[in-house]
Length: 245
Ligand SMILES: NC(=O)c1ccc[n+]([C@@H]2O[C@H](COP(=O)([O-])OP(=O)(O)OC[C@H]3O[C@@H](n4cnc5c(N)ncnc54)[C@H](OP(=O)(O)O)[C@@H]3O)[C@@H](O)[C@H]2O)c1
Image (cartoon, rainbow, N blue to C red; front, top):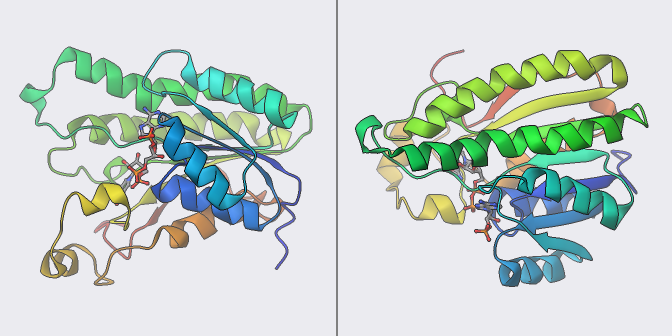
């Protein structure tokens, strides 16, 4: 199926590794023009070479103003933006009393304000063409708190409410916003947790870790013109790990 993404201008944030990199690859395979960003320029350069992406730049989404900068830079490099994939690194673990105020501010900037800043620039640009797609990569934590991921549990649940509100506001302009909630997905970040096969089987009804491509394929479909009637949704890609419905 041709997803009609050829020539679409896409920014994938947090795209040197993991889920972001895989999403960027699928967009490239579909013929989209893709800009990549993350903090470490050397890693990004390697990924850009591997994927055949000409456009990439360094940015740190945990710093104020960098969400806005990333979209402006993309518009400068690609001549516009049709599709925005908001993605960044996961926050540090910590139980409530272990988390300093500085950590709260950093995670709020990274998980929340980088989204607000980037949307303030991207939405008016998308509105000019009566077409736009925004996908936020969040976490199962948005629906079901994960032990020790306190800031993620709080901020990501709130983001779903914010995005539903923005999705309704922008639906008349041909712009959709959806959230994808990765479950236990096989990336560098997850490898650090070193989960045993038994533990994975107990956490995930499908009995295995997710492959980033399983989430990337959905992200790219939700970015295509075919998905125009799907907006404001939070969709888990988790092999059944969320216990609620
Ligand atoms: N993998 C899972 O099982 C899983 C489950 C639930 C939720 N998630 C969420 O999904 C997202 C992606 O996870 P992943 O597994 O793909 O992670 P990953 O493999 O660690 O990749 C994270 C990407 O984001 C970049 N990044 C990190 N911090 C950044 C910052 N401050 N500013 C800009 N870029 C930054 C990293 O590059 P640099 O380090 O060079 O910046 C890298 O390209 C995370 O938010 C994570 O919490 C993942």
